[in-house]
Length: 186
Image 1 (cartoon, rainbow, N blue to C red):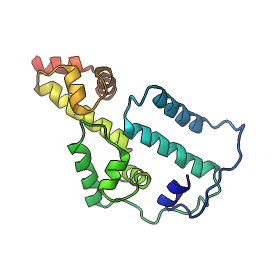
Image 2 (tube, rainbow, N blue to C red):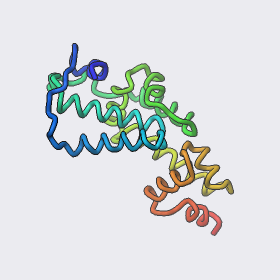
Image 3 (tube, rainbow, N blue to C red):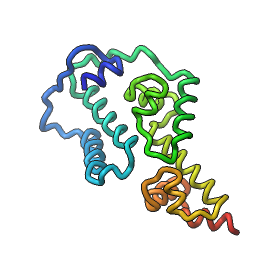
Image 4 (tube, rainbow, N blue to C red):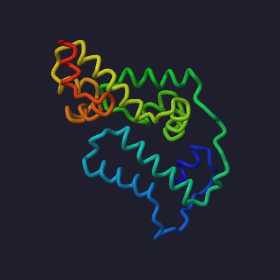
């Protein structure tokens, strides 16, 4: 936590948690449950998702249960357009693989936690949400323009399984991959 606080420039020195055991904190509980589910499934959603949850958990603890001065704000307010484009290009080039927040941030020479925060500030969505959105978009193009099996498309765009792809496509479009492919044939 000290490392994250320093990287986000929210304070220097040792960070301590305030004893608030027994308090029911629904947002903290929800993040912890998502993180626990991800660990139990063996990282089904990928490293980027796991890192994003971990970051959200630590930042929530820092903001709500730590001794740091919560009034201190990061000195830098946003990613430059060039840094954002470099990150997007890096993601696009590796969309079919297991992306890591650390890898993306290292590519533009900033800390992973700081990058995630600035990326969301600049784009309105987290890096993980952006990656999912891009994978869905690429999968839809492949469904519309090729005769590849859905499982092959899932693998090519970086989803861990056909059902994972189906879940995200249905969530984004309201249709299944089979329905999207069928429209192309009509």
